[in-house]
Image 1 (cartoon, rainbow, N blue to C red):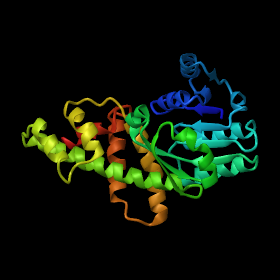
Image 2: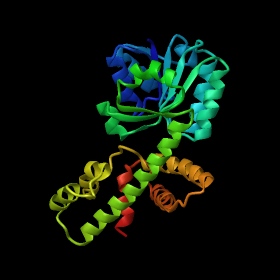
Image 3: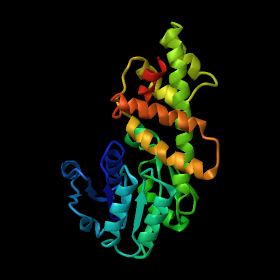
Image 4: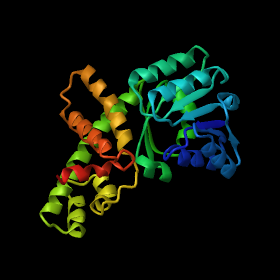
Length: 283
């Protein structure tokens, strides 16, 4: 199996290394060519300069930022990939974008999986991502050797779009947990509690969660090196807001998080980790 990977950011680059470790990686591509050139040289694979450089790939993995980026790459790949190839999209985009991408590729008998991930940059670096997949089960079975190289869990959620729908639910929970943890720890600071005692106490009880465990100590030290950037959270929340609006649910958590991350970006924290939210909660 020959695999290409497009999008070599904080998530894509470590994922490419895991695919390479399985002996499957053939080509890498990135909007900034120097990133593709550097990783290709490191791993001894092809640095793509256009979609044509992926023509011999059986599977192409996308890990890009925006809906427009996904559709642009899919349109280019549709013209060069062979019938029976698979495009696996790990980006977080709208459900309708996933369906449009699948339709564009289906015309050429190329399969598509919408397969957003959760676990952050740490999950990518550790090969422990949770992957939520929409699309045909048989196609997923063929792509599993690739995805499994960087995943802790792969779940087939249903037809095309179901992966992105699951990611929307995931992001509501993530946003709400972030709000609660940052607010709670800001209160703990104001009350003069010792973080070395507070954090393990919280983590031992019902308040324990991934964000508190991975970000609690660093945010209290005002360290906001990105695992997941504020600007990316805001982008995801806008997608989730539209899905929630169409679904008719009360979306108070989403609305609060949208306002907060928009304010963080206005304050110049767009490239900081989402735990920079504590700077707002301190008042």
